[in-house]
Image (cartoon, rainbow, N blue to C red; front, side, top):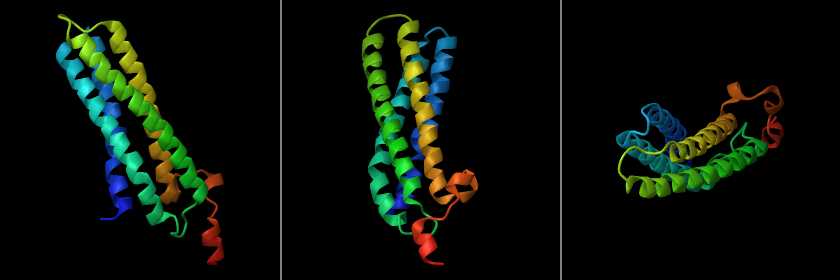
Length: 162
């Protein structure tokens, strides 16, 4: 297994995880602040945030593996790096919000309030979108079939080999 393979393995956790967390938070809102569902949602968000950090830390070594391969564009890598950084920042904020809200709300008896749930839901929704965007830009690096027509141009290294 090389660095690119490791990056591909870990980057799916935050993409799928934040989507699952969003579903659990929506269910928690529908169930009027069920504490058990909230704990499950917050735990999924925290684990997904850790996965986001792992994806960020494995990104640079993965770039070293693929940057000189035929068909790989530096422009696409840079776009993915920017999207990944934004997604990681949002994931870190969302993870901190989940941890803080867990400590604050779970000390009280009864159901979880709609305001803390809504705050975490909106943060998770934003993070989920950012993770999907980062995943999409990363996929374009090696998957020409998902590139738009402006991204299908061969990289400078690929043109030099002709």
